[in-house]
Figure (cartoon, rainbow, N blue to C red):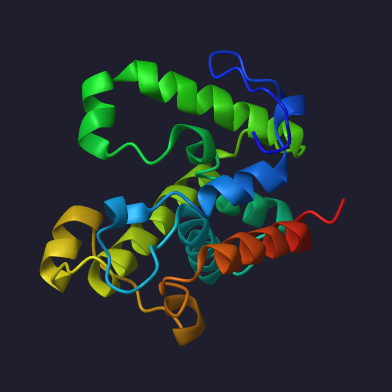
Length: 186
């Protein structure tokens, strides 16, 4: 970790998690295996910002703690990278166990408990809708193809859709950190 901390992937400790490490790492992990158009990759940090914005659109009464859960839903990827779904399926529960332990450590570090079933459903739905937007806008999917993989699209306001535009790495990192600090000022 850039913070100088060591993180045990098999038994991660909440005290070893730093938001600066998460932001730095997620801004450098490419979504869609980097196969998007333009001079910059679309990072997991940007995806996380999009998921949080989609979640707030779907549930306008979201609290900042709910927004933090949405924003940090892919936080383990700052360490393990974006392992594509077929590989995750082949590895099975071993990968999922590592991811869940890291997510529990992240939640513990920032005072979050496991999400309620309703919030977990919101995160999953917002994640799929964000993936649909990204697939069509960035990864060259036809709308019907994206519908098949990610479910139907949802009408989103332009400021939310505009988040699905690749940014320079430093901008993605800075915007992720700024949003985190807006949601978790302590």
